[in-house]
Image (cartoon, rainbow, N blue to C red; front, side):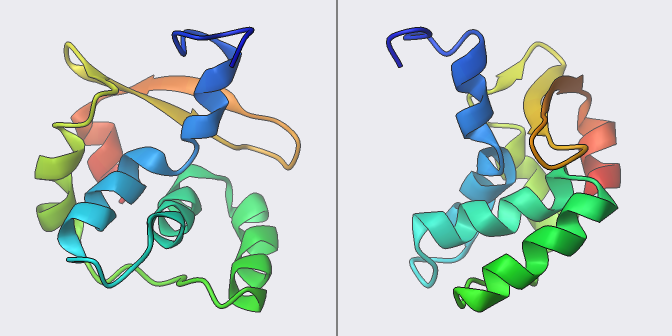
Length: 114
């Protein structure tokens, strides 16, 4: 936090899973904890290989792994996320374990991800 107090660089990686997670949190009416929502939000934001490694870990700790909401419910909430700037969302994508990418994606790209 000291290196990036305004979340402009390296600290953004802590947002992994949060964009979708916050939408899930809004929809679930308190049935899931914040961390459970973020865990669900991480799954679409990583490669198939990472997801294959992440799923058993989430299951081991009894975290949810299935989305019960579709893009129709999630997208309106995602578009109101603080990471939405102009016509793009700033998201963290994990292509491989131990790496990350900060991506600027359009709402249409987010719909494809979901």
